[in-house]
Length: 301
Image (cartoon, rainbow, N blue to C red; front, side, top):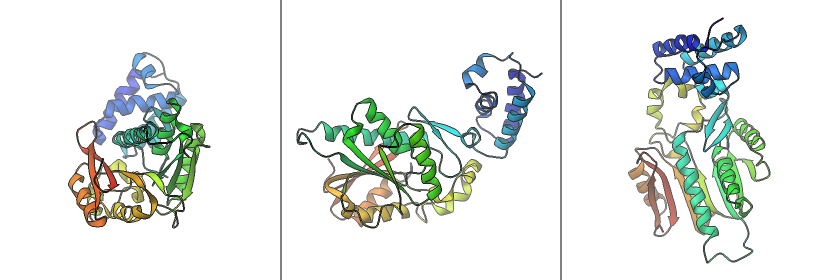
């Protein structure tokens, strides 16, 4: 019977040969999944025997990973903002850099809730999460606000054009016990008619240039192209959302949009051309790269 240490060495070697840049970590995560324990348990018990069924599952996982399939899809889960989300090819895998968007959204909500200008008994802050995918942004935001006992102060609508993605998002909302806190709506960006405008619009829309799609890591080929391809300049979907903002944002509303690390100047220019008189500032992520565009009417606060 093979030990965890032996299987890890063999699996990591196979993945390294296949071109994985995180071969050892991938092998540890996949062996943990096959055995049914956390990665830390695998790392701490290299001499532990692994039964034949678990070893066979692990070998199948390794072959799938060697073919390029993302570890998150093989495991069926992905950690994001301290929460474990269900993931599969119906939606994009949540990225660590997107946590900057959740942090910006939380800060905006708390700023509004603690503002002296907010009267007691005000209605909940209306928020739209556009292109929700797996639901990661909306659900992470609600979970974080819940820890601050502020989740009852917001009303979140999460939209997506993909029925399959919305099904996955609903599953995640149930698994995180926030199904009553987020309303999921099938729509191309936003419903055609928005009667009650939003104070905050969040969006992690496709922003990869079409001509760059072929050069992405092979793992991304397993993800829905609809969630990645942002058109000729990478900002075509974003431009359509910007055009809707005058009609869907409150007078003091704000849109927080995730952008690519090379799109800081481009998004400011796009806002200037699309929304004359509006302002746009770009906030960096933890790596110091442009990540969240903040769009408001008039001069940004």
